[in-house]
Length: 194
Image (tube, rainbow, N blue to C red):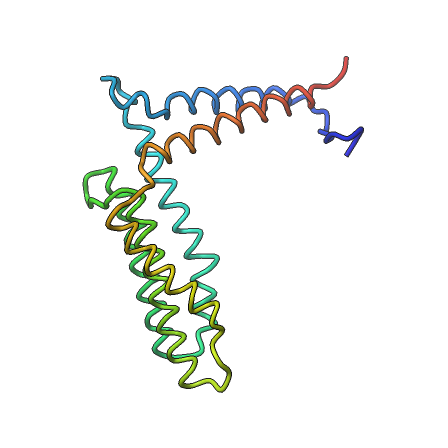
C-alpha cells in the first residue's frame, strides 16, 4: 500500500494490461444480451458464455465442497447419497456445456441452481436423520432448518425460476467490463517513468 492506494510494479510489459483490458471491454459488449435480437454471428455468444459460467460454478462447488463432504461422510447411506448428488451435478454441468453443441439439452440456469439447492437439502435432511440415529450427539437444529429451506426454495425455484439467462448475461458482462477497466488502470500504473 502506498499513499492510501495500491502499488503496482513498473514493467516494460505494461502494454499487456492495456491489451487485456481492451479485449475484456470489447468482450463485455459482444456478450451483452441486447445482441440476441439482432441477426449477427455473435448474437448467441452471451447465452453460451452463461452456460459455461454455470458449468464452471458447479465444477468449483463439486471440487471444493462436495468432494470434502464425500471424504468426511460419517455414514454409508449419506456417502452414497452424496456420491449420487456429485454425479447428478456433474452430469448437469456437463449437460450445460454440451447443450451448446446440441448434444444434450439442459434447462436454464435458474432450474440448474434450483436442482443443486434441492439435492443439497435432501442429502442434509437424510444426514440429519442418520446423524440422530447413529451418533450420540444431536444434529444442530439450525442446520436442519437450513436444509428444509433449501429443499423448499429449490422446489419453488425449479417451478418458477427467477434467475434468467439474460440476468446472468448482464452480470457476466458487468464483471468483465469492470475487470477490463481495472486492467487498463493497472496498465497505466505499471507504465515505467521515462
